[in-house]
Length: 287
Ligand SMILES: [Zn+2]
Image (cartoon, rainbow, N blue to C red):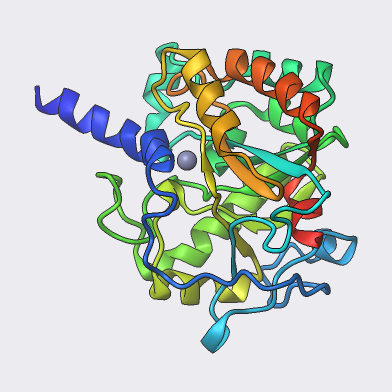
């Protein structure tokens, strides 16, 4: 019973949290226009940022900036939307993967390719280690860009849906370790963006990550794909929520989001029918 409770808590932190966190944060976010230029600091993925992806200027006090959606697109003719997929695997889930649990979702990636949907995958370092061939394949396909979802998928502020917590002194290292693990697979399309596990952050974590030069990326549309069993309900929620400039959070993890592929296959044609164009986060941020 205890084990089951812990298990569901970790899973909730892994994916469920990201289905409920948007809009709940009372923390300040930076939603101004993008500031181009390379990220600073020795830990930044400087090659990626220098070659194109925009990053936001630091927030007040030098805090890591936070991007949620394109700020100025509401009501405009510029109907763009970014689908993002969190490739969740937590540092302590190795034994479960070894026992057959699948944290990947190759069918979803295949669907995105078939429908030619540019998208951003927020990958944990642990996921990249478990699925290096898939990480490399995603990270060498120009249709995709890979962003950082931490190495451990532990919480960067507490409480966070029962996730174990990363000590403040270890936060920067956890993010750097993820970039290293992802690069080690041969993935090249990395962007200097970071999504907090569970979307949980505070000023201390924004400060701790400032030297990495990442821009934190949240979302404005919750897909509700975590633990969903009804693909149509997920699709409806996204279709109801998307506005020009929206950023949608979904998952690339069969274990915790089994109907995402099916939902996406309905969402994509319907949004295109409405005149939307799919873009990666880097293009959404570019404005
Ligand atoms: Zn996650």
